[in-house]
Image (cartoon, rainbow, N blue to C red; front, side, top):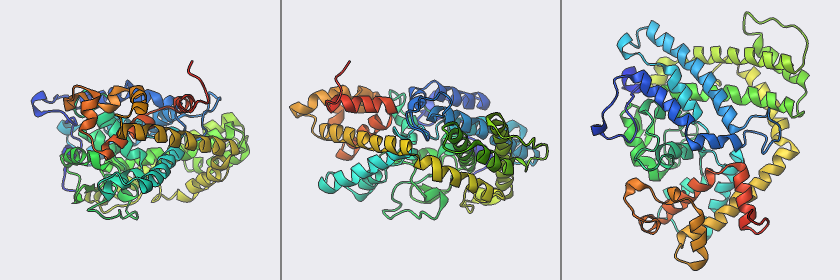
Length: 452
């Protein structure tokens, strides 16, 4: 990566015109990123989106909203530790100083903002529907367009939400800073790279991070950060993206374990034993022996700190390789605590993820999302048909027409969209739904339930 830290921490806003000017207060600009995300409707809807246990009636169990807030806290800690190192070792000068903790924290807030209802099963439902529908209906112009839908990605959708769908009356959506945008991009590449499949062995190509429809604007923005583009629309990660990923990895394993105990799927004693092995890596930790829920929460705190410290050490040890794009792994995977971490992951994977209620609700969600796509996609592809006109009216205009495109009516807007772009507008709409709303709307449109 050729960029300096000053360039990588750019406070220029995505989609902002040059004439609008930039603030000299870089710290204030990054604080505004955090505020814009917190106050956005897309972020609020995460309160009714599945983390692990769908439609849980238990107030303790995490949703995507609480998960994102917790990841943000861990990311802030990681970012500030890195910030201190960069200042103390001359990578950042006093006049260049910004709070990296705030950048990472903001990026963590939006890391799941594009996830459809019912978590990863929602992504799978869209992928399965796309493969079946597009095999029967040859409506797309290119394999790249088809790949975008058949491998539908919540990460790419999240980038689309914050740059296009949310606050869509202005170009650039939320207009977050380029630094925050770069930090949240776990996979800075398209679904195809130079019309060829991605090299999934590379960490930044394991999945894709932006749709073809968004590639020109996204690539133009992140080039300004100095992120190394080694193939067209394929970039090495922004260094702060490794911290965002680490914060997510830490929370995913530890809090899913905690939720599994609360759901009575994993015994509190077994969870305490697993967390205790990590907690003992902290010098100040004292093992008091008893194993109940209050102790579990205490152990989780120490275990989290152990993983934060370890990920920070891995980041610093590999900083030059990260900056040059040669480092291609997650910080957790390179840590000395990976075996203890994977033991916790395995416990959750073999119990909570296979719990009969989790599986049953996910299967129901699979049908709901596939059913909504079956209803809305034909309607947007042929909106002139009389049976489709009322369906189009049900879709909020903000998903069909962006004001900055200067189309006076929804009809004019749709006439300017390809089949691929029309289907993306429907996935924008459906993936933005909460779990409860998606179920309710599907029941009403299927005649299972009458409107209130």
